[in-house]
Image: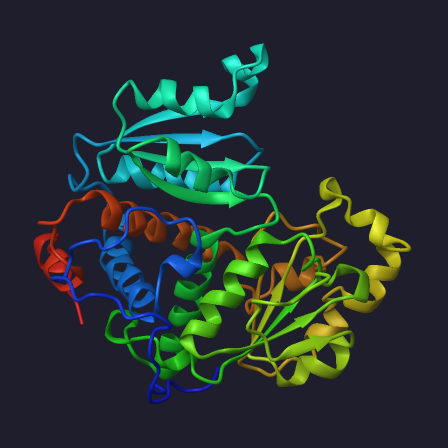
Length: 358
């Protein structure tokens, strides 16, 4: 992958009042738009230190001791739910796990009554996954606790975008021969990313495009016309392509999206076989990638549809690294929201944890 470059000058869309390092300036993480480039950089810097903690033989710190985090998932999840719950426990927080299938929701209780009931037990944060776009924002209006969006409908999935950015930053640092903790986000400037597949139904794509744009990357959406959103207003992309083969040799990152058949994707395609023929990353197509290019996927993967087995398992695939990084990134998000105004920032955190920093 291309060497790290000097940072391009950029200013946040809105001025953010200065705050002492380590003091959170936001109450919730509902969208990538809740962050600015500096905010993303802070999450990544804190993640560097917490990733070192995760690699310890006893991967636990006391940073959130006495705090309670609710894992409220009204939709199926493996990676995100387990990742958040693991992250909270490794920070010594107490975790309450909510499942719609075994709750009073089955008896007709509304989402509002559910979250207000849980909040009355005394909690500090809700991690919310819900099939309805905007549900986490509604929860944030109903409770005093912090709220993290763990995926809402077709809307957004901000922590997935953050862990993807962290993974890309790792790859850039390794290619440059520099420790990841000693790098910023300057390597994203001009980075060429292709997001391939079911963009229309993807909350991951929306969040990732926003994050990459803030960091200076150039993103192209690659999909059949039927799987491109009807409107791309608010999507800061270079463009849209319907020809994956033409684009592949120029990409630094190929980011594959799952075909979301449960959300009706099948109705937008003649057949899965035809989709794979035009947009699946087969071994033949992967051979056309530049030597430094990496392959990413948020999971779960439909092997043999959007990605071939041999590509998913190849050395250029960083899919499992994305999963591993998800724990540390979510530890960082919970820390920055919950640790309090006196909590140390990234550099002080590293020293307090006995982690070598940059």
